[in-house]
Image (tube, rainbow, N blue to C red; front, top):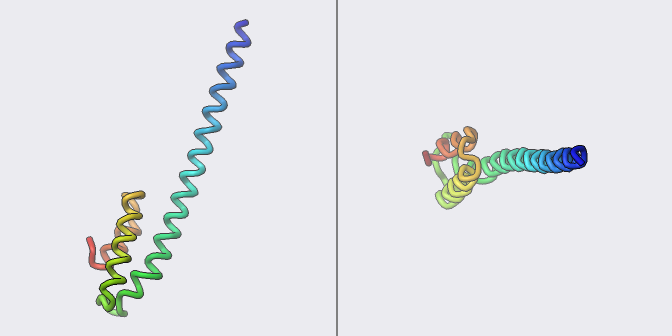
Length: 92
């Protein structure tokens, strides 16, 4: 009887560990996806909105890039790349 209870507990704990592993892997993949999106946004909107000297030439596109990057920061608030992009776009 004792060994059955112990095996049930072990099995339950193993399932919890497996579930936690899945969640961690999912979170890491999401984090990677966000990093890729940050780079894409920077390329697509941020750079197109500025001239070679960093002056805003398309205010609507610049504002869109800023808004999108702020959404990214709401998900990953410590992302330095996103913070640097906002700073370079004139939105600290």
